[in-house]
Length: 271
Image (cartoon, rainbow, N blue to C red):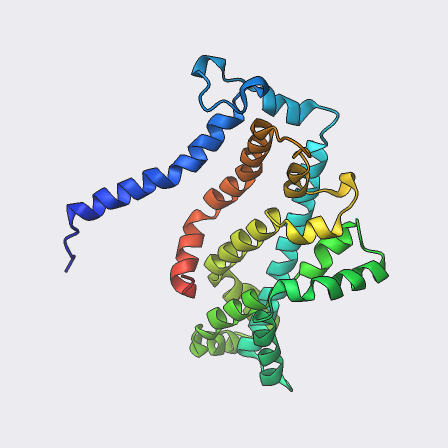
């Protein structure tokens, strides 16, 4: 039996949605302001221009395309690495028996509870000794797995019925065959969820990347856009134009995996 929703709920939901959209609409509007009027509260629509977008994409003073390339390389490598490592680790924890399995999983759970800021200095010193500062290795290899996603994947594979695995064994499939032919095709919602969260986390990553990059050629987009601020002023039209360009790949990724993502949210229990 469906519960009847009060009209007041719709009114509140619509008002909340409109209020939530105001900063986004204002960012779009500001990104089209001319530089001469960037600090004016209101600029007539007839004077809006693509000046800031052209500046970002064509100015030799801004390495926007290089920053974009760096962001794509880092986000794609880290996302693919996480999908491989997290999925295999979750599968092993869920379906195999091996020595020290319980204590090892407890270590993963403990790592999840450590704030990332605590390991900033030790990891920076380690990467500096390895010579990985200002390199793609430093931006990707330490982030190729996620304890939280391993936990999520384990819980997903634990929910698979044992009868399915037993039937696959009767058909002659080994552990790898069961994983690639049975479990992996059934885990598409989980893969989509991992893809979106991991790509989004690395695409917008600022703290680690700003710490590990001191060369402009190695900036990712968030770090590069942050450097558009001047010491005494900031051209907000250019900054917000860059931010809007930064969001486009995430919107594309979300719409590609939207159906599986919603299904993954409902099956994995992410709130």
